[in-house]
Length: 227
Image 1 (cartoon, rainbow, N blue to C red):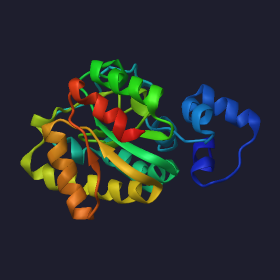
Image 2: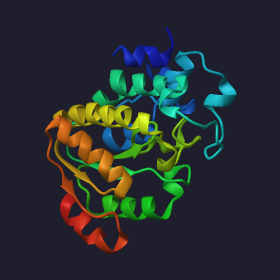
Image 3: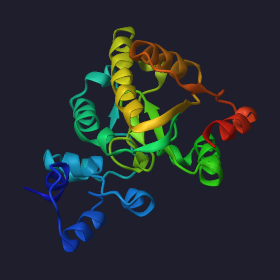
């Protein structure tokens, strides 16, 4: 059993193993530093599944996943398994779960709007956990945008097939139901297409959330919502 599998099975690892895991990006250093938790990254998960090293360690921004029907792509479905069987349960508990959109720019952190929201979180968010809503990955936790496959796909909302929309909504619903058990409040700031999917999912989950417009001129409202 490798280090990622050990951690995902809640088994202890020693300091040497942790150091190796951090260097190999099998454990995320930012969650360890800021939240004090050891979280296995998608890289660790995919390595445990014996994915190709060149693919898993592709340069952030290099497009590896593209085309049609990506919600049904085996690599994406493996990510969904990782998300629901392990990752979401490692997030929190906390006060605010902030849902923001993905971006055409990869990694997300290089986009203008991502940076603006990040600056608000860093300045005003005492216990804010950011989650990026993505097609086709559904949810990408803050800091994970540099890892495969979050930084390696191209699938704009207009590419999503009508038949994929119910799949997308159901997966977001499933994610929100977990997030709602881990956080006191859910805040979302999303553009129109993401907002529609989110609100359909939230309605199905019978969850309430605080919306602020996805516009830089309304970001003072976002500050108020997360404080």
